[in-house]
Image (cartoon, rainbow, N blue to C red):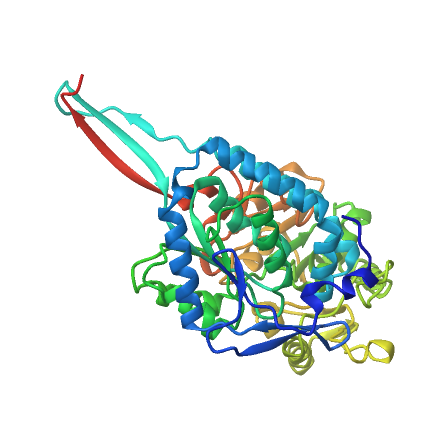
Length: 497
């Protein structure tokens, strides 16, 4: 469906009437009728009001998901689920311009970015369609009596609780929805309070595609209310969470209520290493957009840039020039490359890190300020580059989630590895070099779930990605992702025949 900014102003999600939760296939208000505002971060203006979910709303949604899981949905064949995903693919494609525009208005990413994910999201849906018939069990040898046959079967895990972040819900919901629809589970999704609109709209489209009521439910609200209630709910079998490491620890604690299985993608402080022999014409824009893309609001952002000392000064000069030429503004403008931060809270957080960097003696090479003028009502920060940074500084240790780059020099590959691994995180990382031996030394030495060579941030849903250490565990996408939505059962069969 082709759409434009003006037509979306009249979209039901942007009307004055509050939007409810989607439970059992129906939009309904919260149990206590409380609402909260969702704001366009480019303008600071409220664009919709959403139901503020609480424990009672979560309970209603979980009950709906359980009823659906135990109902006819459980008997859908792999072929039927695959056919459903093909219909979903076509509907998402038909409505993608609308969804991309909702995402831009809701969380601020430029329309050029949200529209660019069309192919990736459609590819992801088709990837999960192939997984519907790829969940076979095993016939295993045993050392028991000659008449004993042993099997491992796999079956859907049950009700999934999905808690997704605000930095790209249009994409991140599919790492959960895909596994749910491929395996026959059901789900309660709790999107971030700062960006829920695309999740609600996708849930409507799933119903239009023929998804049974209650298979996918969406409860909007705050993490400490609806999110915590979902993580603690005794009838949720598994939690898939993407967010900060601090919140991830709370999810782990809450999951002990019934020993839920967990998939956690948490924080990152990813190293991006540039050697002197790298192709600088590729490395400069690659390293810049590794941290500036989505205004730095990317879990695997390459916010620690290690540059070999012999090219350090040249590289700083070139990346500063690149950053200064990036167009920051309202994402609805066609030439804008970076949008705002998602909220006033996030703006204050990022500005606080910039001030801390100054206090610790880092050299501000570019940016470092909130943008004013026509952008004064939004949450805009200029692309910011600090040099003369060392690994003990706050901006080099903590996840900022903003367009702030720390440049740290190194002398050789061994030092680069030590510096890269001197962090609690292990989500992503990259190396830029023309040397195969150097590249492989980094590939084997850097402790991260994903590692790029001469590129950054490239993801294929059939390959997947995940983290290590404080960046979490479990994978998204790839051939093993759906395993997390399945239970295993060992079967011993004696004397049949």
